Image (cartoon, rainbow, N blue to C red; front, side):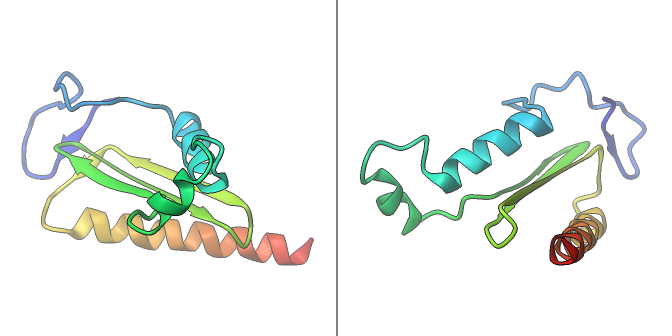
Length: 111
């Protein structure tokens, strides 16, 4: 997918920015981190003291958020193909992911 940086007329999809993954792959990995299935015995307890098992990141043209919600046993992954590094797009993505979680919680409580 084309990536855009606000104010720059360039398509960032050909930039090499490291690891690539699908939303499904990120969700599977994040769930495995949280349920401990990627760790040897005792490792999760060690890592849990220094890491939060979620992801947020951005590179020119792209940003992502991925969070696990234990109360719903749900992983929410959000990929966005626009960045601005001034914080507007990031703040907007935080608002959107929080609204998604609110909808999911409401549906979960209605069940």
